Amino acid sequence: MITHYFRTVKDSELKQIDSIRNGVWIHAESPTEAELAELTEKLHLDANILDDAKDFFEVPRLEREDKLVYFFTRYPYNEQTEDIDTAPLLVVMGETFLLTIVLRPIPQLDYILSGKIEVHTTQKTKLFIQIMELITRSFERQLIGLRRAVHRDRVQLRKIGNKEIVRFVNYEHRLNDMVSALLPTNVALQQVMNGHYFAIFEDDRDVMEDLRIDNMQAVDSARSLLKTIQNVRNASEAILTNTLNDRIKTLTVLTILLTVPTIISSLFGMNVPLPFAEQPFAFGFVILVIVGLVGMALWYFKTNEWL
Image 1 (spheres, rainbow, N blue to C red):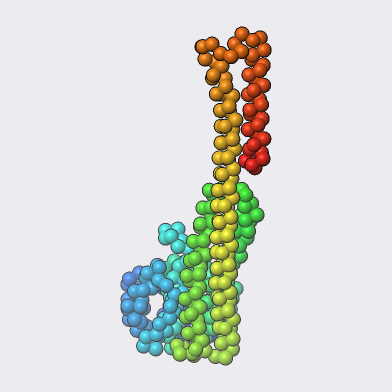
Image 2 (image 1 turned 45 degrees about the horizontal axis):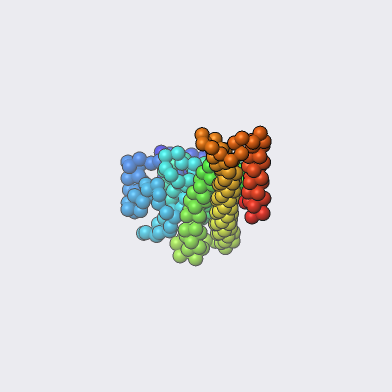
């Protein structure tokens, strides 16, 4: 679906229009082949680059062809059909328009379309920065949620089981997706700041620099959280291994302790002449021997810290 939005500095609100005009923002969500072909023809887009926009796993990058700038990035999205937690976004900057193409709904734009954030489509560079700021903020919010979840599980380190380990693996997967999206996006933003791709006013340059710093901080935060998860997983594995060893040692000690009375009782249970067979206190003597041997074994294991 293709939607056209337009607003000048004199307009009171963002409005939807029916056709392309100077200063328009064109938003294509899950476009069909026919719609992409129409955009290619009307806006003189590069068909090969537009084909890349149809790849759900396209990596962020920056290209320029025939005075048009193609900015590929990714935004957080809870994808149900693909094993990935981000979705691609293509921003095309033309002389008279700004085009955004997404394969999935992009919730971050709801802030703009609902009027919570004021934009002017005739100010293309500022609109581009506002879109990127919304994406960066959504990454930051996800990082805050992940950090809370990781620290909540870390507090119960000794109670970590299979479910918690699976959760940590999912956390790592999401964080790696974030880093894979933010790092090349930050490189592309740095290239944009050089001014070789499209004009950036001095006021916008400061905002772009803040945006680039926020992106880098999000990358550092994601990497730090990844390291925390790895430390927690290593610690939990060490605890599980140590617990298993303790249980094996305990079972081994119990086996040895039970073996002593089993052997003695087996010997005296044989149907052959045995020592003390005619003595009235033979049973008590055998019990005392068993208790003594088991006690000595317990003392030995306690001395060697097996118990």
